Amino acid sequence: MPTWFFTFFCLSVLLMPHTCKGAGDNASAIVSQMRPLLHTFVEIKAWGDGAHEAIEAAFAEMSRINDLLNNYDPASEVSRINAAAGEKPVTISPETMDALRTAIRFCELSGGAFDITVGPLLKFWGFAQEEPGMFGHEPDRRAIRKAKKLVDYRAIELTEVQKEGGAFTYCARLKRPGMWIDVGAFSKGYVADRAMEVLGARGITNMLISAGGTICARGKKPDGSPWMVAVRHPRKEDSFLTFVKLSDASISTSGDYERFYEHEGKRRGHIIDPRSGMPVERMQSVSVIARSGVESDALSTALFVLGPEKGIALIEKLPDASALLITQQGEIVMSRKWPQRTVFY
Ligand code: ADP
Ligand code: MG
Image (cartoon, rainbow, N blue to C red):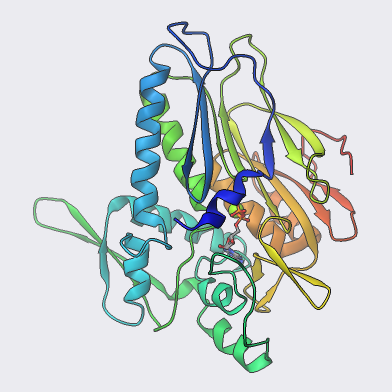
């Protein structure tokens, strides 16, 4: 695994300090474990009977799903789909099918601002490598247009065939050679949701999962108080924009401060507008609170691309979703339901 994966340790959303660490047999002590996964460090906190074993099972599930989706692992199912772009369909697991269908819903919802086939543009702008940057070629309109033509989620073909006996087989195909799915904008949220399900199925009702810029919470802390998360300031590494209480919800932050490089005095960040083909310059950070990890993760990236006007219009249409956006000029924009009105910019 490349080393830059681990530099993501400086989370865009940081966990608030917690009261207990480690567990013993005390069912009301928080059990906390952190592991490298999903190109970042993932932390699971949970309490209740069987929390230790449940956390083990949750990490195992996260690894299993990540092995299917990780487009930087040539053996993953998504990499096999990418390798066969323009060729024949690839048989995939129900899990990969579900993840792709889920992600495509957000591509549709955002009108293509969020597009999981953004891979060719990421490569073009030098974000598909360990150390981001452009070496050799500099942007020219024709080359951007060429990469842009390969970005279109509508050219992902998903098929489902029911066999005799009722079982389904699932296939995926990218219609054009050179197309490339990148799961970076939604996989942390998707995989964290699967871990929450595993914990829930084992009777755990109180948990907090932190996976890079996405944090999912359920239930409360042992003293009955809600889980609290801090949203990082996009320009001051050790400062916070705000704190929010999180219960049965997820929060994700997309920022321009984690993966970027400077070019002729300009900052180029890792979120690309598939419609213009250009890295988004307008935003410093976008946080979204939503019901699930995949929803907040996909929407924070989508709103980063859409910007404040269209982004707020989208979020206001969705039940139980809210957003906090910081523009490049430091303007603070909140949707009506954003829970914490105090923001220290
Ligand atoms: P992080 O990965 O830091 O949590 P995000 O969830 O916002 O941040 O995802 C950013 C990643 O999403 C990029 O590194 C890239 O892999 C991918 N990406 C960039 N632009 C888009 C886009 N317009 N639509 C979908 N995915 C994108
Ligand atoms: Mg995201």
